[in-house]
Image (cartoon, rainbow, N blue to C red; front, side):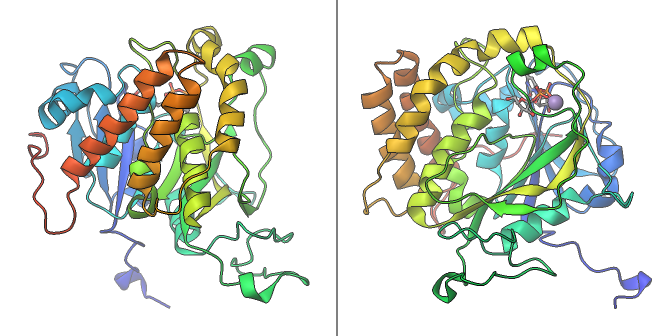
Amino acid sequence: MASASHASTPLLKDELDIVIPTIRNLDFLEMWRPFFQPYHLIIVQDGDPNKTIRVPEGFDYDLYNRNDITRMLGPNSTCISSKDSACRCFGYMVSKKKYIYTIDDDCFVAKDPSGKDINALEQHIKNLLSPSTPFFFNTLYDPYRDGADFVRGYPFSLREGVPTAISHGLWLNIPDYDAPTQLVKPLERNTRYVDAILTIPKGTLFPMCGMNLAFDRELIGPAMYFGLMGDGQPIGRYDDMWAGWCTKVITDHLGLGVKTGLPYIWHSKASNPFVNLKKEYNGIFWQEELIPFFQSVSLPKEATTAQKCYLELAKQVRTKLGKVDGYFNKLADAMVTWIDAWDELNPPKGGVSTANGPPKK
Ligand SMILES: O=c1ccn([C@@H]2O[C@H](COP(=O)(O)OP(=O)(O)O[C@H]3O[C@@H](CO)[C@H](O)[C@H]3O)[C@@H](O)[C@H]2O)c(=O)[nH]1
Ligand SMILES: [Mn+2]
């Protein structure tokens, strides 16, 4: 047992960055300080770059605004959205760490049924460091947790599991509902704490929410593009959904796992459902065609990396979704630009990045 004077080193302290998209102040970090302070923060400031975002004392961070994105990516900066939380994916690109945790600035520390503060980051790390079971469903949920295991009839040949690429956390209080649901259930709050972590089976898509999300950047980072959303685009608030559909077909293809469930955060702010409806309208309509498209995606065996899979997916988006709306041709182009920008900032080991360095604080 580590004595108080030798508190154990936080898990993955130097291998994980915390990415926060923001248009607000960052006072919410005070509540997360015990859990986040040892980690490096990457703050992506959306909106007016001349607005000063105050970061509480004592955090190690880099803050990037629109000017930094343009300076670092040049013409490729067109793939990074503005006026939408999609801008957060710039933080994934500039990070140099193996793992990413992203959280919204209106998410706070939740309490478990015993009343104990939930260290969401620690639970995500445990989720990422333990295998997933996408090929055969374990009815006792995550078999790698203390007090659980594979149930009778679970094939022993599959019990090693596969590497976990994504850990999708949930939210108490304000649930992540779409605008129509928010409109008809304005007072609904999620009070149900479900003590479970599930691997999402291979071949099943899911609505990935970017509010409380962690992933292995080396396994799936290049596919975590949050799309063209917000300003100048016919759609918003489908950034995380698009990334979730793309990454799920790619993790399925690469034999990687995606988990959902614990940890919970406390989501405090309900955004305006009328504003959200305007942003989401096309997404609600188009997704009835997007889902069958992603369900039918097949990637070639030569696509052995996230980049190769993503570029192949961009080709299929253009050929199969371009007829749904011209927007998807723009999006397919932006997917390719994203990979160009990613590879420019993240050259193969030993290569030299040509982008300018982090912003002046
Ligand atoms: O133009 C914007 C708007 C917001 N942000 C930052 O993004 C996150 C989420 O913003 P917010 O909490 O206001 O919105 P929600 O409706 O609760 O978010 C849910 O919808 C998804 C939007 O795609 C989001 O991931 C979900 O959590 C905050 O940190 C804002 O500061 C922004 O950068 N630009
Ligand atoms: Mn929110």
